[in-house]
Length: 286
Image 1 (spheres, helix red, strand yellow):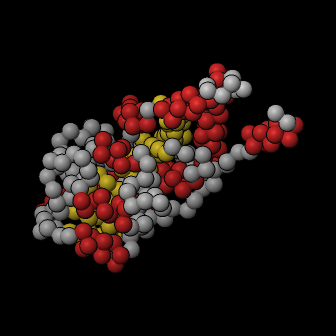
Image 2 (cartoon, one colour):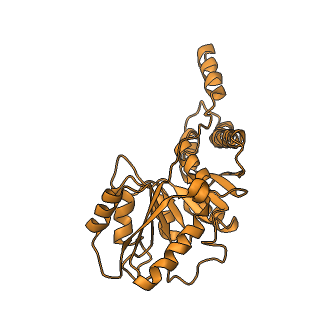
Image 3 (spheres, helix red, strand yellow):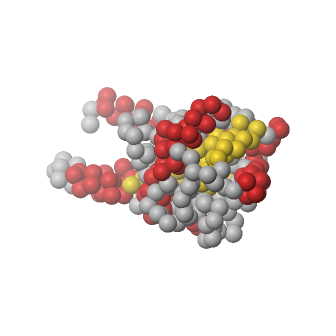
């Protein structure tokens, strides 16, 4: 390696992505439902209680859209456009039977999460019976997940905003070990490169960046006198299996993740598999 290349590597390694809090304002919440009139107040009460972290400073305005009379997807999108909420709250299998088709979120919710720029909070279906005891009580255990955590200020800011005081914000990053091993296998075919050194150095580098970023998140939130605790969960592993395990073992109340991808209509990356699998976990989909 030339002196110039070595200097550039040292310089790049010293570069740090520092957390910068992004403004998150939730002034209006739209609840989209398919409930009978007598059940609507109960669901509104449930949603307000679950999102009590948003009540600081007077709390948002709450509006309801829907009824047990079937309505189309265009009607939902029109309601969002007219209301201009900062957050949409709904649940899986809207205008469907809870758990009948566990392969998706339901047509209405699938489109809603992709066809609008408004964050969507997806709750378990109100009739679902296997929701964990800790679920839907509050948001004192929130987890933000992504495969590129370092520098993801918007994701972390939203997750922190939804974490109630004295709660815990888990920042999780799982590096895909299948992709990692494929690149190491390619390196193993290049005679001039030491495979074992490459394995250790690359692994350490991949995990160090998100860990350092999480430290900056912890310091940044502490500097704002935030009353939430920040914990890191960084590892090399299987994306879906490990994220599901992290959610279950840490009894996560709310999972925060990106769902939109500028390059495709389908849901972003690992988001859709997680959304389908974690059917009893509330999801904030940005």
